[in-house]
Length: 417
Image (spheres, one colour):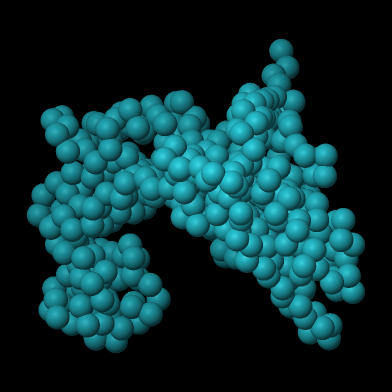
């Protein structure tokens, strides 16, 4: 049996944990630069506010309905996700973190009442973090997704946990689920299914396997078997990233070289930190810039450069030096740049890499990076930074940003007695 655990309206729920006055009120969270809606509470959904709605266009709707608006606070959301996943990992030795607010748990060998076991998970996670969750348990991962959707759709009837443990329950669930809501079925595949009269998940699993293989490839066939109750989609082990990209749209158009260099330096430093977290060394990197493509009257310029490093490294100092050298080759001072980024790629395992006789990373940097990472973990992410970096790591429009309650000691929640 597998469990699929999903945090309900995760970003909005994170905001509510530290501000209970938001409970029962419509809440939306905006994307970078406060552009569009990327998360909604149930109350906001009931107002007809769609996902991806432009914050500018819906400003009057927010004001008229007293919608509480927040800028995306990703450090807070990431930390709350880590806490939820850590608590859930105690219920099984095998966990697959599927996204920031979802994970699969392999319940193989657990001999207990799974309805009660799911409720124990729910109680432990919600008591430990304040984040409400829904759980679906079934013989396969795809069916666990279906069970989770039922638990979320009918919270009063299921208690937030639904178990598909009989053939009758499986058939009933598939008869209820629309094909467009099947996990892994995209808009194009849904159109094909509707065109042949397959409107529900039960219709999909009854289709000939040859048709599914031809129209939806082997991935669709695996999904069909999983929904039949035949375990086909396996747990995915945690793997190291093969590339790390840090890209952002700038708060304003940047023209001076120093402004652009500061952003590239910061992006490189952020990538280097992630590189060290997974104990990898980088052998190649890409630096790119973009002008504002929406300003059609202006000349566009989208330069990029691939840099082959003389030696593998995860030192922020060395990577920033290479990135800035690359930036000098592509920068032109008569353009206004709206976006930029750095991608680190072609990794080697830091624990297995054999150094060269002639060109190597400075050995002193390894201990220095360990000290910097330790201090930043103990205090806050940018307690120690390069002098060429701005104090604001994320230079974006964030007019509705909440505090970093769990990741910055200076913004810890205060309680008045």
